[in-house]
Image 1 (spheres, rainbow, N blue to C red):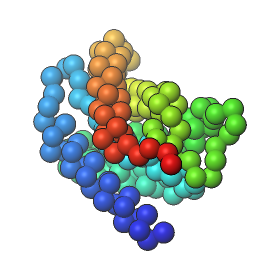
Image 2 (cartoon, one colour; image 1 turned 90 degrees about the vertical axis):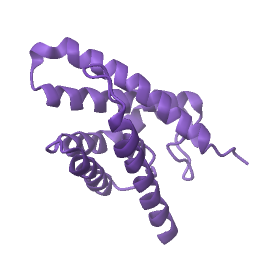
Image 3 (cartoon, helix red, strand yellow; image 1 turned 180 degrees about the vertical axis):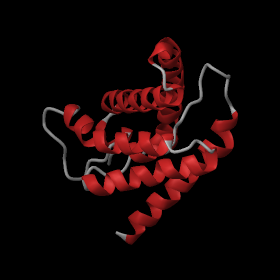
Length: 170
């Protein structure tokens, strides 16, 4: 249990550093900025309690806000995703259900499941983030453009990360 917590903390630090030091500095103004730190929340164990998931999600978003000077929009968005994640996982439940050892990872639940899960979570996260950032429904076309381009890039990066750390089932 302690080893799992340490591993999750290490994963969080690596993902946060990748987001802050690399991806936040690679942008095309007005077009995209891929936020892949959501990958940390996406891959938390299925067995985590809903309240713990929301708390961890909030802390993840707050960490990004502190380093990005973004006034809480990442904390709000991550908390929202933490709230929605159990419902999204239920929506995508395989016909046989989940096994106790399943993890929301590519190697555990398969390529199709993981891609659908990633697309849904990443799209909702980016849409909420850019909508809050603009605070205007008049800019919905800009929000959708940024959401689609950023989500596509983020999902590709997340899938590449999964393949990089891919473990085959025994």
